[in-house]
Amino acid sequence: MNPFLVIILVILIGSYFLTLIVEFLNLKYLSPSLPDEFKGFYDEERYLKSQEYLRDTTSFGIIHESIITPVTILFLLFGGFNLVDQFARGFELGSISTGLIFAAIILLASQILNLPFLLYSTFVIEEKYGFNKTTIKTFILDILKALILGAIIGGGIFIAILWFFEKAGPWAWLYCWLTLTVIQIFFMYLAPVIIMPLFNKFIPLEEGTLKSAIEDYAASQNFRIKGVFKMDGSKRSTKSNAFFTGFGKFRRIVLFDTLIENHSEEELVAILAHEIGHYKKKHILKFMLISICTTGIMFYILSQFISNPVLFDAFKMQETSIYAGLIFFGFLYAPIDMILSVFINLLSRKHEYQADNFAISTYGKPKSMINALKKLSVDNLSNLTPHPLKVFLEYSHPPVIERINAIRKHS
Image 1 (tube, rainbow, N blue to C red):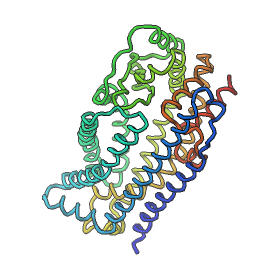
Image 2: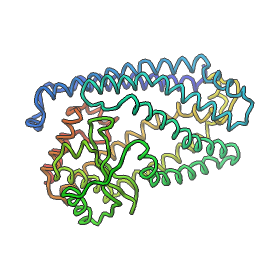
Image 3: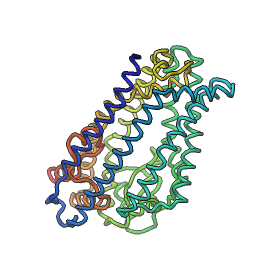
Image 4: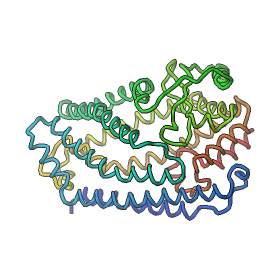
């Protein structure tokens, strides 16, 4: 049997069963008793509701994987990729145009396959628990905008990668790496100004005590910002968040309107102090450098497999091509990506503790930070007692109770 086919099947099936084990353990780890830390924030009814939400989303996720994984395996085993390739070649265009058709069909088929799940998640599960505010019109427009952006941006990157691997010989991986790095940095500046406003409205925060408190704190930390904005997050969900976009003098503070509605002024400043902590501790820069390095590793490994005939035989392909090799490589890279993500999440959790510590040491209101974390957990029906294996493999943030304990310890 083809060795690459064996490896890919092991990866797909192994990933599926690992997901089942982790999710089963996570559900079994649920505590029926409300943790003492959250008494007075969660009432018993809402706490039970949060656990039902976790059960529903977990069960739905398992059903999704139980359908997607077999479909992917069958598509691979019965030569589905080759059928798409022969169709794309039938237009008798150049290799890059043929590659675009091939990739577009594969990605569009994937989108169509996942669409019913996205609809159910948004309009049934999220609706059931009072989160969904998305209208059908907004849902459709979001998909269309994402497809258009994906075609323009993703298509442009795909063309560049194909061109380099066709023309640049053994150094193609390096040119691809450098090009993608420049694009990533460019979009860090472009996204807040052009891309994100396509999906949400960003309105300057009105004058008042909240804006003054935010600006005063930012100034006290010598943290320059372009402005403070309110985003219409309630357009899609009742869940809340806050974030920064941009770099240098282009940095913007963005608050979800739902966050402003549900939190006190001190809690909001504490949340933003945490986010500023990420910048001051250079967490953003570190993750950007890690992303650049891992991208380089990915492209180098890709260059060793992209035209391997044994890999193409595993996918029942009649002819080899760089464009198909790019997609097939994704199957082989999956376990490497998972291992890297575990280490990145470990570092991210460490950074969250550091940012919390920065917030309480500079803003000096640990109680406000703790209350903010509790409210966010309650409002979003977060799982208060995740299984350690789930945390280890998937969590970019420490469990909320562990964060609160760390804040109390350092305050």
